Every structure is written in C-alpha cells, then in structure tokens.
Image (cartoon, rainbow, N blue to C red; front, side, top):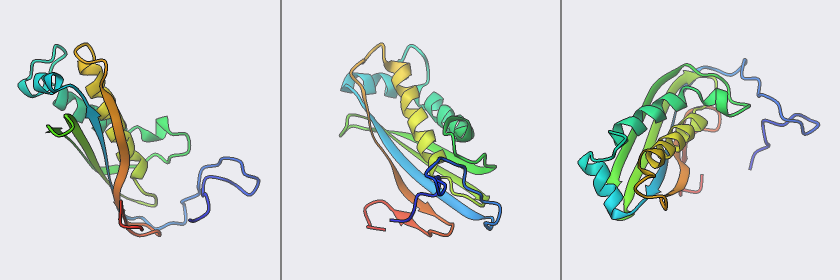
Length: 161
C-alpha cells in the first residue's frame, strides 16, 4: 500500500500538487446498485413513476454530479472532463437497477472520485424519484470497477492490483 498523498509531513490534510505531473488520458469506471421491490422496478420500467423518467433523470444527475465532484469532496481537483457515461440497467436478480459510470479526462490526475460521485448521485436520484412507492430501497455496493492511466497504472476490481 502506498503512502496517503493527501496528508502532509505533519499529518494535516492538504491538496496534492499535480503541477509537475504529465497530462495523460485517464479513465475510471464505477458501479453501484439500488435494490427495490419488484413492483417498484416495474413502475420504473413501465414509465409509471409519478416524478417522471427515473432512468433518464438519474443518468443526467450522475453526469452533472461528476462535473461537480471538486465542489463536494474537499481535496479533489477541478477537472476538465472529456467524457461521462452513466447507465442505469434494470436487473431482475436484485431486483433493482445497476448503475455504472465511466469518466475520462486528459489531465494530471485521475477521475476515480468523479466516477464514484456519478454513481452515488445517480443512485440517490433513483431513490428520491420512487421513494413514495418503496421506502425500503437500499443503495449498495458502490465501488471502483477499473481505472487506467497515471503513474499507478491500471486497476481492475478483484484482480489483486
């Protein structure tokens, strides 16, 4: 495990200086799920949620959130994001929605936090839009699936890297 980069020599939180790092292509993918009653998933699939298009709204909320990550997470750098893709796929085995986000940037620092923020906010949006039908929903398993680029190279969840 490498040293914590957001701590100075005295252990105080600080923003990492990335001014000497090369601007390279960096990507990250994250995932989370919203577990709900089968009836709630049916409402979403059929477009019968009272607040409107749950999947479309959650997708847009996730995209918007990824671009504002630096405003939410204190030590994140503001980034000029090149690409954000958020998908919300129904999954009968949960039952619920599986939310994934992919974020890309050409810059001196990675986009893991932006991908995780996109997933988190998309999941929260799903919850908000159908909570009247199902207050027992659970947001679970938000995690980084993969990242590429930068000094630390690639990471894939579950492969030990």
